[in-house]
Amino acid sequence: MTLVWLSDLRLNATLSGPPDAAPVILIHGLGLGAGLWDGLLPALARFRVLTLDLRGHGASDTPPPPYALGALIRDVERLADHFALREAVVVGQGEGGLIAQGLAVKRLDLVRGLVLTGSATRLGNPEWWQARIARQREHGPDPEADCAALLGPRWKDQPAAGPLRAMLDQTRPEGWQGLAAAVATADLYQTTATLTLPTLVLAGGDDRKVPPDMQRETADLIAGSEFRVLPGLPHLSMLTDPARFGAALGDFLTRIGHG
Image (cartoon, rainbow, N blue to C red; front, side):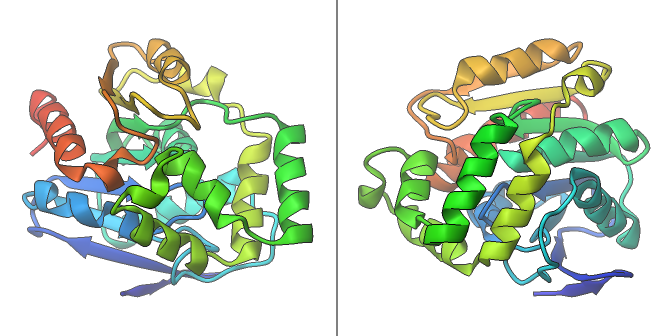
């Protein structure tokens, strides 16, 4: 664990891989953390890989909610600048995919490719998110419901259930509420439609949270993007089957000449 001191908070971030290798930045979604990618790291051993806990998650600081999407994008931008990363492929999972899209629009010098998984340009509507935030404030977290949404109805039988519960349990309610508020009003349709960089939209075939058809719509927005489905896998396919997810990601990185 490495805490990077920024001007207003500390973020937990880890940089691994050969110093001169092509960079890959991995951004997790709501309620999760850098550990989401642990099983994927062997497949990315030849790259310079940055993993991080978003503000309010994992070992990073938890400012009071709500958060702004722009602040979350700026957090990742500052980490990339801190580690002198340029022309990275940014992988965004779920709500982290919104951050990845925003970063690509803002910093074309930093982002040369995108991989979006379980994400879209908009995730729910403000009223739905506000109801979720209010419910969590009143009743506390509901990790069993979260596990079912992220791994599918038979989540208790999966080896990934343990690591997932650990990440969910580590997320402070204020951090969850802060990130949820940031994405509640996010609609990146118009800005994402301007992107022309190499992009892979990688969907789990059994994703109950963000169905593949919804993810395909995002792929259709970006000129020259690729859409691929991993049959039988849920929302967190990198956690349940890192070998298949890593193979698909590695194929894409090779095709675009990254590293």
